[in-house]
Amino acid sequence: MAVLRMVYVTPDGGRHWVDSEWRDTMTLRDAIADSVAGDLIRLLPGSYFLPEAIDLPCDGTPEEPIIIRGEHGAVIDGRRPPDPEVSATSPGPVRYAAFRLINRRHIRLDNIRIERCWPSAVYMQNSHHVTLKEMQIIGGTYAFYADGSGCHHISVVRCSWVQDDSLWRYINWAMVHDGELVPGEKAPYRYLNGAFFGSNNIRGDIVIRENDIRHCYNAIRLDISDQNEDAPLGQFNCNVVITRNRFSFVRDNPVEPETVAVNWWVSYNQLYNCHKWFSQDGVKGGFWYYFGNLGWFDSRPGPEGDENNGGAVFKFGKDPEALPSLPFETFHNSFYLRQQYVKKGTTSQWCHRRNAIGYADSAELPPGLMTPGQPFLGEDLELSAQENVSFDGDLCNHPTFPAVFDRYPGVYLGGLPVEGSIFRAGICGDLALLPGKAEPYDQPLAVPMPDGTVWRSENGLMPGALDGNRLFAGPRYRPIDPAYLQQCLQGGD
Image 1 (tube, rainbow, N blue to C red):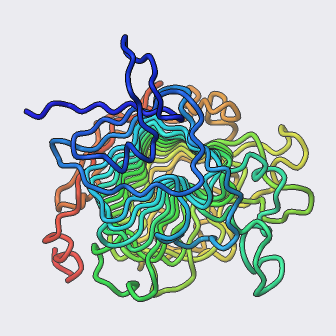
Image 2 (image 1 turned 180 degrees about the horizontal axis):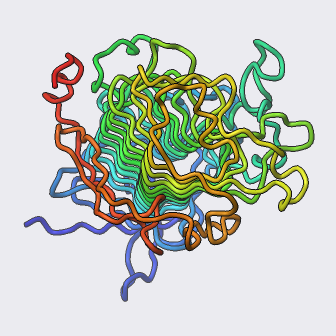
């Protein structure tokens, strides 16, 4: 068994009293340049100014990863201004990042605070088996970015990111998105159009778990380039787990796959004051599972005159060729809303069951916080039973539920329409059901899984994400079965 090599790092690389002895330390750059598999590189407290990116020079191994771990009080400060050339695109391997991982594997970054590193704190290209844990990121177009089909098996766990805390209330949405203020012109705050975790052309096997993501434009956005948009399903953006995160004050989309997504599990997340929660605009694929999520609000975004402040839960596209062809399951979520559920567009294969959807009463809120008479579904939304879209067993207090489904024959299969509040204290994020609003279901829920099996829920569950005061027990994640995927795509049973 190899002996652990512990490398002590300080800002000055001098001799310091550490762990009961005087020890020689190294600078961060020298320690990483000298690193080998099995190293534990410890950043001792202090401010580490990083004028140039650090490129990791070698790999770890499965048994001996390279671990770079910060102690409390260790801060990497890039002192970089925003880079306006990066907006909703890959930063690329040349631009600045605190850490760049190019063709690396078995690397772990732990408990490091990174500030003012634009456009990204950590950039990865064709790197895999990377763990990013308990990182605290302030600023950046991206906290973490992954690029290339060699990127897979990346875990982001218990990290936090604050992009810009003025974004929710003081920056107009159109001032971030190119072409919205003036067609064809770049937006003045375009450098904020990034994400906590962004990617381009990655294979998948991504876990994003228990992170705290606040005051940003987007949270999770996985893209692919135009030349790969017709690649076989499962080649890109496959096997993605987004679970137990907290998304707060997200000005655009907390979850946004682009072009294609296969086997995405979006579960047990908290969404607090977010704009359009789940974007599927122009996305093909499927085996999408949205369950156990809790969403609520007590604020509405934007400065005076910002018209992009309505929001929605799901965002669909209009292209009939860019729709899911595999199961899209939404079940046992609890949402306290001021916005439309879906505004426009269309989808397919959507099975929407046993959710608790509670609308606030605009008359009981401060003026302007909620649009009076807010529709449940937008007039430009198209839903069809022929496209395997169905709503069944949902608890909802919107006054148009379920009559709104009259224009969609065969989509509404039954539900639980009620009047008045359904949650104990929705405005406070307490989404336990009020007594008497619903009865337990007398049959288990059956949900098709990506390996060809069927998951069945416990008997006696109530609508929504909570089973009493705790989250309901949903299915356990399982990766896509490639043979079963091909069988589904070929129309097999």
